[in-house]
Image (cartoon, rainbow, N blue to C red; front, side):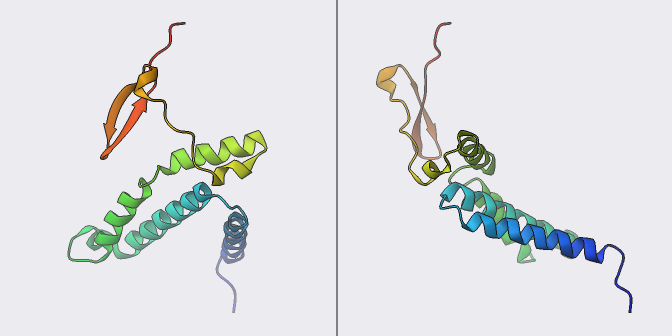
Amino acid sequence: MDTPAGFDAHREWERRLHEARLSVLDWPHPATAKLVAADAARDAVTAALQVHGAIGYTDEHPLSLWLRRVTALRSAWGSPAAHRELVAAALAAGDAGHLGQPPDPLPSTATGGTAVATAGQEATVPAARDA
């Protein structure tokens, strides 16, 4: 019995992907875990929608609930893009150990920043500096 065309290439790609996912487990960084989990959830929902078709988008199918959950949770506690930037900056600096520490506090409004309300939290945007 012959194997389907591309089967070995697909198996090799899956093996490499699995190794990459396992290598992330060695990193003690919440940003890396959030990034990998968000991407895996998106990939799983996308694959499920491909299998189920349009019914997956309707309220009659449980997949629509997972689609809404994944969409909402991908941006919870920081977007994947923000986590990618954090991990990339740490790798570029050669010190990925600081990713496990809490971020620096935001500048306060006393230093000339502007308070901005976002999702029930108050954040501060630094004031523009004269050049």
